[in-house]
Image (cartoon, rainbow, N blue to C red; front, side):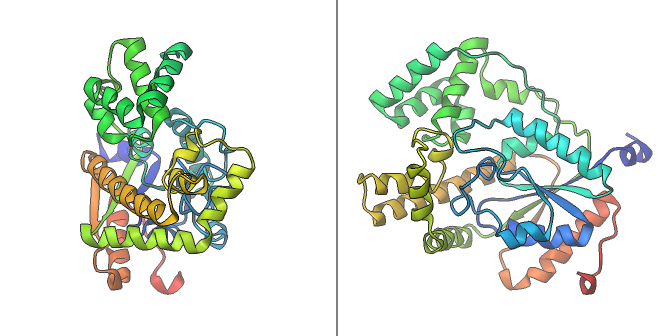
Amino acid sequence: MTAHQQQEKQKLLVLIGPTAVGKTRFSLEIARKFGCEIISGDSMQVYRGMDIGTAKASPEELQSVPHHLIDIREPDVPFSVSDFHELAKQAIREISGRGRLPFIVGGTGLYVESVCYEYEFSDCGSDEDFREQQRKYAAQFGHEALHLKLAEQDPESAQRLHPNDQRRIIRALEVLHLTGETLSAQLARQQKTSPYQLCIVGLTMDRDLLYKRVEARVDQMLEQGLVEEVARLLEKGYDRGLISMQGLGYKEIISYLQGETTLDEAIALLKRDTRRFAKRQLSWFRHMKDIEWVDVTVEVKFSAHLEQISDIISTKLQLEGKSADLL
């Protein structure tokens, strides 16, 4: 591809990284510096009323920079990677049309990758009887058993899905049931060529520090009212079986609120599961291409890290950002 052809493409900036690595703080500074509008690349932040457990930016932060794909669904309305793919592409077109830079920020690897590399989603249909059979199997033998069934048939999909993510596990089994081909094989067949002039920046840090930040974030969520947030959702009639309510921070607190665990047990489980989630995120990102990694382990060097990221963006997208004294 010639330099001219590359310049003809729409520019797309992406910031990825595991939970608690500091994406929000960096994203706001980057957005102001380069005239961006942020598109959330998080599968849970689409849900209204689920603010603390999904670590949404504060109302003040959301107002300081335009954000998209946040609070667009009620918790009982399904939201899939194909939904994200379609809405994110629409947002990119609209943001570019305003002369602004579209900026995807998030940690849901498949969602982000699907847009960066123009995945094609074929609708193989559904089989409600098959789905119900799998739900009954999980109810009888447990989520772990259903996850193990997927691991035996499609180990790659099982590796990226949490055992409690029942809806996506069942969908992966259903795809194989309907097409005779695993979901992971279908994803591997994607071309992974980008329709955009693409710049992906990945944030990483020392694993021990990341885990400490994960645990500190859980403590902060509890101080901010996570238990009360989950209780309000239950009072509104949102069932624990919803995919939204099976998200990290929600399923653990539901177990406490329904008397199945103590609060201390729920917190310990949430911290453990979030550490494991961060590990799975990093594993997914390591298999993505085109990522410019920035190690942000030394937290006191935020300005230096921001300058390093800015240099990457300026080089990859041929952009000049505002100088620090203009931010």
